[in-house]
Length: 361
Image (spheres, rainbow, N blue to C red):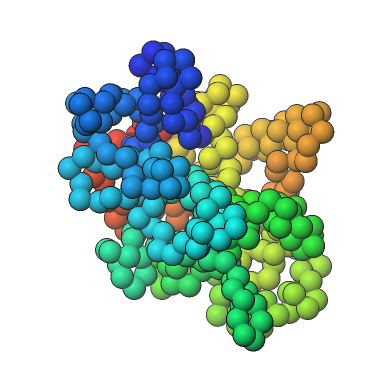
């Protein structure tokens, strides 16, 4: 994530709500990926970091979900770009549900920031009632017949997350039980968004043949493949061909895992550039040089983590077949960002969203 500057010159970080130096209130403009100091003019907020310092309003979830994102003053929307995508939340009067909901919304804001950074279309259910992106955050429920378990997953634009994943102890227990190297809320969000963008950008489109060449034929019965994976484990040679064991279960999961890692890598590299750890660079059609830079950086990150006694932040190996898959993801993302596969998200602030993309280069 990039860092920002307050009007007083202090460095600001994504997620900050107040400058620690001058105590000025802050807000995030998602369409610009910009954390801005705010000026309160007799109850009206103005974004000082935007051209012409337009009037803005806080998201209606500012208090309830600790959302620091902003809505354009002239917009009729009550919720910000990220919060508008949530359709169902858990019963906030029960246990730790309010805490879990806030954690889920925080992870979702990171995801949506990713999607805006890449110039991907963020289409909500108002614009596409059948396949628009929406989130359900649900809890397991006691029923007369037992407990109804909520399965985290994706179905035609609807991403469902079991709120138990926001419980650190539960999530770590599941990670160990399943033998996973990595399991986080943001990882879940990025993985499930991969299924959504496969539906929007690959299924039935010009990239489908290339997808099948790299990932395999998705027409293979998904239920049978998943049953075989959970009954017998991953393919014996999964380390040579896949980024994770789970990716070997089915081409759809291979894509979603590769998509998630593409977001991991590109976001981390932008952060590294912002802190001067990696030389500035332009977006390139060839993703190979970026993977080489990531290889060097991730090794350093893992070594630094071991030196302070914590687990490797990137415990994965990118083999040549995995690199080819990541390269295809990169090509499809670049194609989508160019506008040939979809339109960008609603931009309530002017000028256009393209200005935000240019500012990240």
